[in-house]
Image (cartoon, rainbow, N blue to C red):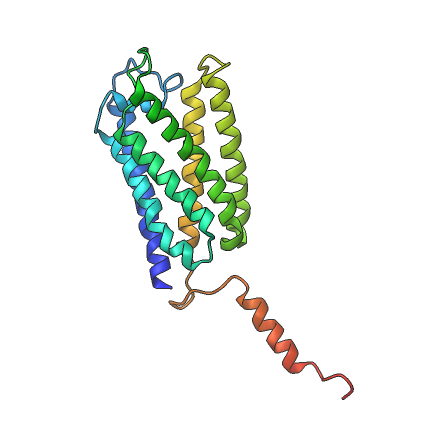
Amino acid sequence: MPGTRNSGLLALGGIALAAVLAVLGHLEVSDDLNPWSLTVSDFAVSDRGGVIDTAMAVLAAATVVLLPALRRAGAGRLAGTLLVAWSAGLLAAAVVPTNEPGLPMDTAAYLHRYASVVAFLALPVAGWLLARPLGGRAAGSLRGLALTSLLLAAVMVWSAYPGDRLLIGLAERVLILAEVAVLAVVAATLAGRRVGGVAVPRDWGHRQLAEVAREVTPARGA
């Protein structure tokens, strides 16, 4: 369907814009901030309402754009709910700042942290659930990226607590790359779902072959 393809293309554009903004946000901050030991939120809080916060909002919007197309593609309600949770978590983290690096956490910082946790966990599970309805090569990519994301999330949790924040910034950025890749695969798959302007179901070819076989196979006892 043209609508499905357009949704995928629009989401891909949003994902690309968010990536550019996030890179710019890292280039504009103070040289005293270390990306290997500080999280993206630590960078964002130094420039409240800046390009990193904007990137998070754009990424959330790009996800929402995909929801109607995914419903048409056969995605289940749980996958859609998880994508909404990811988007809401991103928006909450963008709006509610964490604390400045080195300062004790306040209520806003805890809200920011747990909104981020919800987002980071919801997206890979949604990606795993979307593997089946999207099918094809996207299925393997989504399952691989989902498992990678969950593993990286576990590494980040280890770094945040028993690991004394060892390379937490690096772990988070690799996690973000994996999760954005989940979204990109979903969007690219939807963007490519058009043959002659018409969406084609994954099993269309198999159904056609089965119908031809029934037509050409002699009836039993003939």
